[in-house]
Amino acid sequence: MRHYQRLAVAACAGLAVTCALPGGTAQAISGGRPASAAPWAVQVYSDGHYACTGTMLTDRWVLTAYHCYSDIPGRMSVRIGSVRYGHGVQVKVTQIRHMDSDGVDDVGLFRLARPVNAPNVKLADVDPPRGAVVGIWGYGSFGKHPKNLRKATARVTAVNHDDIIGRAVRIKRLTGDTEPGDSGGPAFYKGKEVGVLFGPGEYSSVAAHRAWIRRVTGV
Image (cartoon, rainbow, N blue to C red; front, side):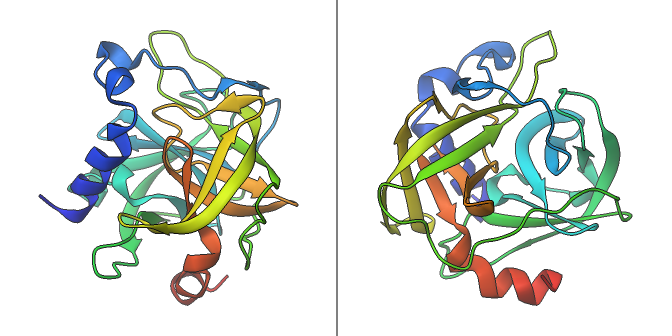
């Protein structure tokens, strides 16, 4: 089993009941509220089917979870700049990068086929402190009817090592929780992205990947 496939299985394990439901019946961020605007937000698609949430890092690079990747980059695409599922600028993905540190990693960089004019998120160089309130965002997975991107708040309970993803930012619900399909979505603290969602209540640390992201993307 390939690294990204192992990650996908592990990310889904904590949501096994939901992931087993047919037709993508889980909703985006449970609780919270619909986002009115998020031009940096990205919907990630695999072979035409919605897969994950992401963020615009530069005009050519998207930051998301590596386990959102499918076998062939040409089958990956994104929609950018709309809070509505299935809307926004559509662009194909031509390259996938990840920092494989002895098999411990779930942060992915997806390079787009062409530049996209959209606001870019800012990345944190340090992890949020324990007790910090972070904003979490996600499109989730959907049934037949389009839904909005949703946002909520959560509290950081710890930043520590995880055997699967390395350094993890762990959270608990305040106004909302993450759901399947929110994978790859951001956690923000003081206006900067501090985490990339791996699984329920667990984000990959952006700070732990900061130097690598800069080497690949230049930012």
